[in-house]
Length: 156
Image (tube, rainbow, N blue to C red; front, side, top):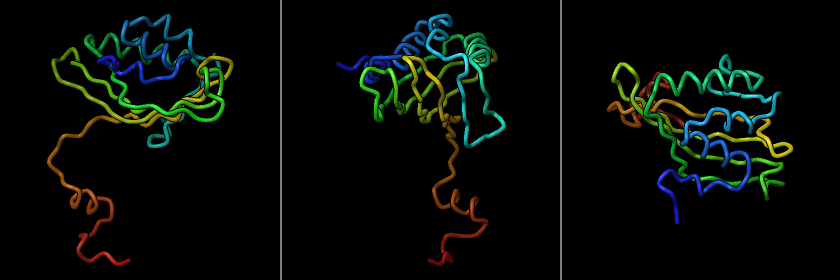
């Protein structure tokens, strides 16, 4: 049976342990799952990429302090070659987070993270979590914003 936070959808191993520790707000337990030379690649925002687990601690410390009711939800996951027990390979996670900042404003993010595992630790991630945009822009306006032109005149 699925847990409300979806953590049981994750394979046994470091990714599941990190998400479980996140729900408990246990920063030390989270950090135990990251390799010291962890690499975070953020393709949509390359300047946000970093190396080292110390930055992970800094990020999550700020998140827990700035969003006291922060929760994460795992929507789905898949594993890649060698991931059987979480000792190597890849774990794809579709997930989201939500909560309320200290100023009272709601924050919500959604996306995918592709974790690379090594020696039962998280060695890296390709991180695609983004703020949820609830504006009223429909798909046509979004395409127009990307192309700079209306969709009616598009040519194959």
